[in-house]
Length: 70
Image (cartoon, rainbow, N blue to C red):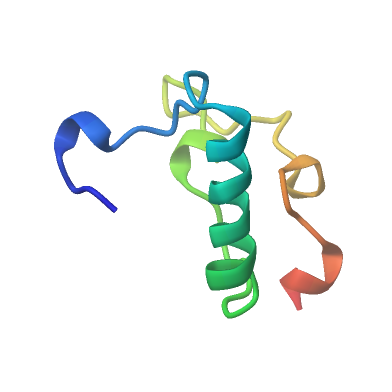
């Protein structure tokens, strides 16, 4: 829950299995249970040059379920 700029990253490659499970539990129990997915960040939808990422498919994203979109 740190807001330190050094801690604000989406890179989870250095986390242990237990830390990843904890994050998934927080995501599922706190956010996923309460809030539907209504959009995605530009980092997922756009290429680095700002053009649309034609390969982006919401159904291929982690934790996506069709019912979440309705």
